Image 1 (cartoon, helix red, strand yellow):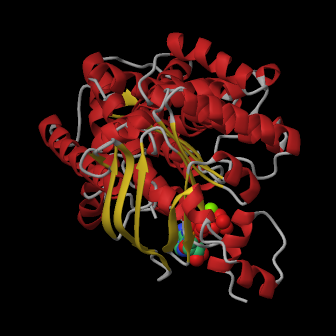
Image 2 (cartoon, protein in one colour):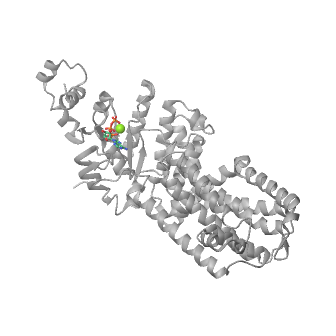
Image 3 (cartoon, protein in one colour):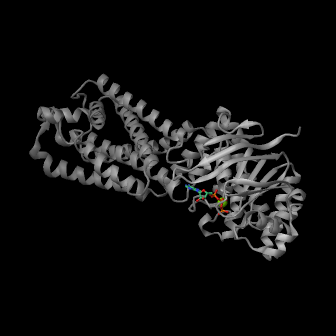
Length: 254
Length: 258
Ligand SMILES: Nc1ncnc2c1ncn2[C@@H]1O[C@H](COP(=O)(O)OP(=O)(O)OP(=O)(O)O)[C@@H](O)[C@H]1O
Ligand SMILES: [Mg+2]
C-alpha cells in the first residue's frame, strides 16, 4: 500500500454557532498526489483545511498526516504541512522578507538559514524586488505569492493551498500552476481548492467534490469525468468544460 | 521539535516584539517616563515637603518605588494584551504560529518575555530618571531586581489572559481602566498600608500590587509593611495560577481555535 499524505476518516465539524459544516467526510490523499478539493461556496473546504492545519477543532473523526495523528502527534504532523490560507493573514506592517523568515523561525529554522532560502523563494515567486516592502504595499496577486513563499520556508512535504489563484491574473495563474507542478515533480504532495475548474481538470490527478459538508464524488480525474451525464448537461443547458459540467450536475440546486 | 528548534521559535517571537518595542519607543517608553517625571515634580517639589518623612526618608523616596511599579505593571500588561489581541484580531497573523509545531508553552513564554523586556526596560529607565529627583538608597539591589522581574512576569501573564479573552478592542481597554488602575492606586503606591483604617487594609491585602510595591520598596528602603516571605509566597502562587490559566487557554484554543 502506498503511503498516505492525508487520511481523513469520518470527519465532522459543528461550529459553536450551530452550523454543521462537515457531516462525516472521509478523504485519502496518496503521497505525491496533486489533489483538488472542489465544492461550491460554503461547502466546507476551508473547514477541512482548518482542521488539518490545527486552526479548527474537530467535532468527531480522525485526521492523520503521513500517518501522524494531528492531535496526539500535533508537533510532528505540523512540520510536514505548509499552508496557504484563503484569507491574507500576515502582519501587514512587516516586511515581506520578515514575514517569510519569521515563519521559518516558528518551525525552528534559525535566521542564518532562513534568510537565504526566503530570498530564493521570493525570487522564485517573482517578488524579489518587494523584499523590503511591507506586505501592505503589495498588490492582491503579490500578496498571494507572498503567502506561498511563507508556506514553503520549512520545505513541507505536504502543501495545502486554499484558493491560491483567487484574484490572480491569467498569466500569473499559469505561472503559479507551473510552479506547483515543479513542486509535485520534486515529491511535494499538493492539496488545493479552486473555483477554476478547467485548470483543475488539466492539472490534478485526484479530485473530491464536496457539497454541504459531505463528499459527493471522489477519485481520479478520469473517474470523475466519467460521471459526466450528457443528458443532464443538455437538459440543464450547461456549457463549459467537462469537469465543470460534472461539478454542476452534482452540486447544483436548480 | 528539538529543544534547539523550540528555542529558535521562542527567539523569533521575542525578537519580533522587542524590535517593534524599540522602534516605536515614543509610544512604548516615552509616555511612562513623562508621567513619572510629572509625578516626581509634584511629589518631590510641590507636595513632598508638606507631607513629611516616612520611616526616616523623604516622601518622594517612599513614592518612587511605587511609581516604578506603576510603570512596569501597566507597560507589561498592555504590551502583551495589545500585541496578542492584534495578532488574533486584525490580520489574524497569530495563525502563523498556530499552524506551526511551536507548542503552546513556547507561545506563552514568547509573548510574556516580550512584555517583560518592555516592563523591565521601562522600570530601569524610570529608576534612572527618579535618581535625578530623589535620594534613592539601594539597600538590597537583589530584591529590587527580583521584584522588577516578578512584577513584569505577573502582569505580562495577566495581559496575555486579557488578550486571549478579549473579543473586541474594548475588551483590552476596559481591564486596564477599571481593574488595573484601581489595583495600582489601592496597592500602596502613595501611602503605607499601615496608615489605612482596618477595613481598607483588608482590601489592600487582597491586591497583588500591594505585595509587589511593598517588596520592591523594601529593596530600596530596607523596611516593609509585611515580611518578604509572605509577599513572595503570595506572588509565587499568583504566578503559578496565571501560568496554568494561560496554558489551559492556549491549549484548548479558547478564543483562538474555532
Ligand atoms: N468560524 C465560523 N463560525 C461559524 N460558521 C462557520 C465558520 N467558518 C465557516 N463557517 C460555516 O461553515 C460552512 C462551511 O464554510 P467553509 O468556509 O468551510 O466553506 P468553503 O467551502 O471554504 O467555501 P468558499 O468556497 O466560499 O471558501 C459555511 O456554512 C460557513 O458559514
Ligand atoms: Mg473557503
